[in-house]
Length: 297
Image (cartoon, rainbow, N blue to C red; front, side, top):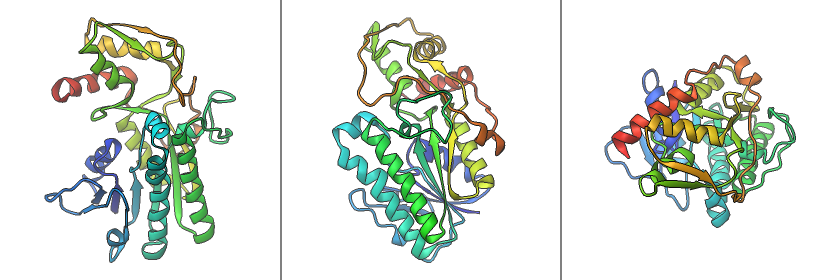
């Protein structure tokens, strides 16, 4: 297959490039200037135009790993978040419509579209009540995927990724824990520690993308990407520091961060029916991430 990965320099994008390059012809696209990588397109970060990317080429699959991925930043810079997560998705699909309408399009969405859940585990039919600009914009991107599927028969699929982590990630919970442990004996965290998340290692995210390529109907499909395991933040922090073999102490300040939901765990029946099986449990995933941190951070 000819596979285009947009956002190929990002966290999930890099892992997609490494994985799919083994068996497929992979083309990359990002805002980062790169003069040496073959099959690479540089996109203007402020006014993306995908015409040159799709002109004279027929991709079988386009995986959109691009966009902003920070709830706090979406609150500070909502227009930037809108442009990266909504406008660019529209531009990509509109260009596909004109130049490569047979291409399968995978949009990496987020569990942030759900907001605070009405019930657990959260299935794909759960109402969407996002509580951050990031979550709202991700839902808009899903709606755009549906729009282009219904009106122009483009093959689209949105993956609602829960709490992804792993080698190469330089933000979010585990990165913050590592960074703070280097400057403070006692790490102070938001919340109470009773908040929960459904963690999934990035290699399993790539596995889920592969499963979607092979088994999705691409009729504006919505699929949860997680492991269906609810883990408290307190337990996750303790597990991380255990793998880090760090003497840092931690406590929770009780302060709630705007835009963060309280509890998350996914119903992944749909993903498992398509063939997904967890390969990296949290303990082994954190061990790999800590090894990467020690070598690279």
